[in-house]
Length: 295
Ligand SMILES: NC(=O)c1ccc[n+]([C@@H]2O[C@H](COP(=O)([O-])OP(=O)(O)OC[C@H]3O[C@@H](n4cnc5c(N)ncnc54)[C@H](OP(=O)(O)O)[C@@H]3O)[C@@H](O)[C@H]2O)c1
Image (cartoon, rainbow, N blue to C red; front, side, top):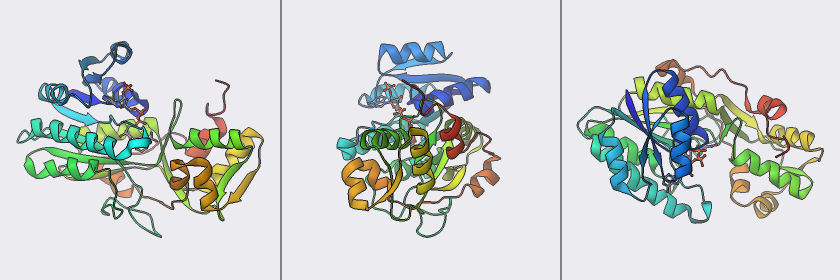
């Protein structure tokens, strides 16, 4: 398959490029800079120059493909609403080209906010009023002749090169001299390794059904206290309980996410796509991975 990927130069996207090429697909990645284009060429992918702001470039990439994976997102959370609006416009542009073709469109979302007090499942729909509407926008194309599906990722997609929430917790603990959790720290985050996530994108592309919701979840729910303790141990600082206000004050947006209890299951995803996570879990990755290597 000739696959157009946005976000192909990112942490997860670069693993998806490698996974697809390894499985015999041809990949065209979106690049908005010379450095991005160079990275894609070195990985064996073709290049579509453009950006999320240039909808024509997205339409060109989608038009010349047999399927699309959308991973690009601007993670500058200072203007999250604007990033979400841009994401929605991008998905509309990509999906619009695929209408009536039965070609696959795989978009990216998250598992946070699916359920309270039990693991969220693929059958749940997001209950939170959330400005990011990647899932709704992407799946709206399922009724328009597009094999549109969504991958809901864990709040921690971990592995070498991670620059998401976990490194922010590590940096916060390093700066403050302690690693924090909220209350008893029993609230949980699901997690998945980026290489397992990459395989899931390939399977959704190849086998996903129109309207399919798939969970990028390997660890159903890692207690936040366990994450704080391993970070504390690796940095040689104490892990301490703080109030939600203190943690949000110290860590900002990631502090708000740290307060969430969001266990999530991928049982149906595993059954439906034959996906099996094989990489280390989050705690093992923090024990043995490169998170604490000198930069
Ligand atoms: N990492 C996680 O833990 C995690 C968890 C849940 C959900 N997700 C979601 O998974 C997806 C991929 O995440 P990631 O961690 O791989 O992200 P990332 O490493 O930050 O990469 C973002 C990608 O988007 C591209 N991009 C950003 N703004 C762009 C623009 N205006 N025009 C064109 N390209 C643009 C970047 O291109 P450049 O290389 O040019 O910057 C890069 O390829 C995102 O939708 C993210 O929200 C990630």
